[in-house]
Amino acid sequence: GALKNVLAIAAGVCEGLGLGINAMSALVTQGNAEIRWLATAMGARPETLSGVAGMGDILLTCFGSLSRNRSVGVRLGSGERFEDVLDSKNGVAEGVYTARLVVELSDQYRVILPVLTCVARVLSREVSPKQAVFEVLALPPLAESA
Image (tube, rainbow, N blue to C red; front, side, top):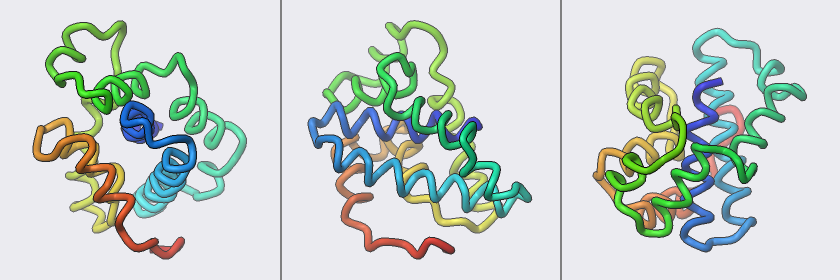
């Protein structure tokens, strides 16, 4: 459940960059697969994530206008400084804190998570939001069972 918040930040970055709904949908689809891969590696049942509650929660968090995590991404994608976004946000955007764990979990379970780890790279200021999104969108498609 917590990884959906990291994915929502990525979706918001797409919106903030003005890339459109097609790019955002591609990114969310890839990120959703990554969540499934990691959850399965950790022992979860994949059908739990693809069910109405699991998928609905992910989609609402990524595309809903009231999502705090998506709003953080929109603001970062629009060019606001990370520090300013954190100082002024309303409520807790859990994805900001969860993103750090994504890299650790990716390494621990040996699962490739390009979308989710790019969010961690943006938040740690390794790459700009624009660079991160274009890196991810330029990757060759990964097999569904990767």
